Length: 346
Ligand SMILES: NC(=O)c1ccc[n+]([C@@H]2O[C@H](COP(=O)([O-])OP(=O)(O)OC[C@H]3O[C@@H](n4cnc5c(N)ncnc54)[C@H](O)[C@@H]3O)[C@@H](O)[C@H]2O)c1
Image (cartoon, rainbow, N blue to C red; front, side, top):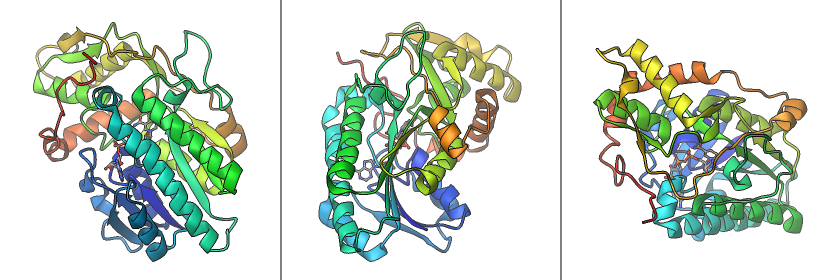
């Protein structure tokens, strides 16, 4: 299959690109190369036959039309987005422009391309979204695909809007779409402004390891390579118009997660005192959702998918990767805003 992957130079998109190429698919990687992108993430497949890169912004409709007409993909996997909640608090406009208007442009370009190729029923538009569209849970319960949307940050509101657009393009125009909403990803090539890489890099630098609020916020953690595997499965086997929640079956409070990371670092990169001593509690993020949890029944029962690693196994692999790939993350630490506290809405 020839797959157009948007956002393929980002964290999850690059995992999808690497896995798709390794499984023999052709891939067109379309990415604007924002601050969050890194072409090193796909260096291992850049010379593979069947790989092509297009530096294109999804806000640029004529460029999207040109890419679709040049490459004629069988499917689109749409991951390009502004993805950092803290940045969405400081500057929501880009999130609306890329996540809402960019998705609208891509849907329109896809619809025109699909109409032009005779509305092939095998064509797919796979929209990749987040569990954050469902809002915040109390101590009990899980998000199912039927949970009403209740986004609470500019980021999640922009992703919720894009999900609605994708469903509307299916209902109104018949575009063959599938959607996925997944929990927090972690793993290799995670940009160093997100929680897990921040913890590892602050720990290694001997600096305070920041925890927002009291660290009681609970997230479900999904290893990025498991996520990429689930995404390709949904693309190939998911029912048209259906959405699938993808979770790691690994709920942890932020404080537990950080403590686990410190314990792994104590073992893999020992020093005189424990890395846990560097944990520091800082002012919470405004509107910080208390708990997210995914009910993965649909993807498990209908498509037979479940995660391959526990969070402990995935975190071990991740810490090992950061210890072995200092050149990758050192180069990113100078980028705009990285390492600075963002998203305090003050
Ligand atoms: N990271 C997570 O835990 C998580 C969880 C659930 C869902 N998601 C979703 O998965 C997708 C990928 O997330 P990620 O963590 O890999 O994000 P990321 O920030 O690492 O990568 C996003 C990529 O999109 C590109 N991009 C941004 N704006 C663009 C534009 N206007 N045109 C073209 N390319 C543009 C960037 O250059 C970057 O390469 C997003 O849609 C996100 O909402 C992420």
